[in-house]
Image 1 (tube, one colour):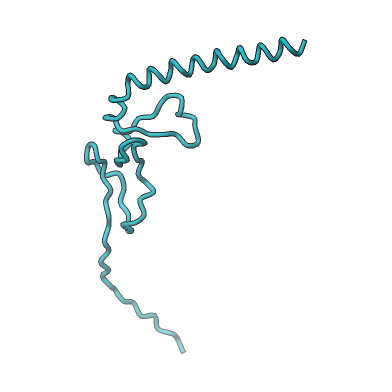
Image 2 (tube, helix red, strand yellow; image 1 turned 120 degrees about the vertical axis):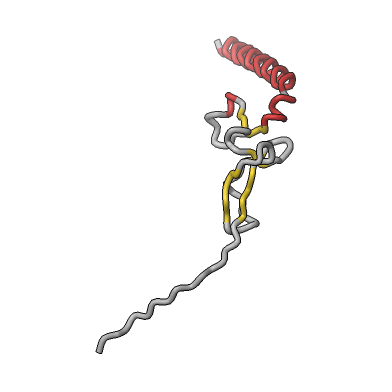
Length: 108
């Protein structure tokens, strides 16, 4: 005796959530779950969702495992702050080199 295979067609309604960039409104990702939003990147300061073309990263962070991203607006507002940070980071390198030199000098 052969088993008969019954074929049934069903229509399923799914709700799909689209996450869009808070800057340009382009669609970032789609998802079936409203509470899961792992595919979006948020600006470090204003917490807005940003797409690839609206997100920026400091060049120093590009190779980082956990880089910080910024929206274009926060990036522009931060120009003078980034200049100050770069200046201070340069000072840290000089201070660290002097510290190392002092330790090596004492060792001799």
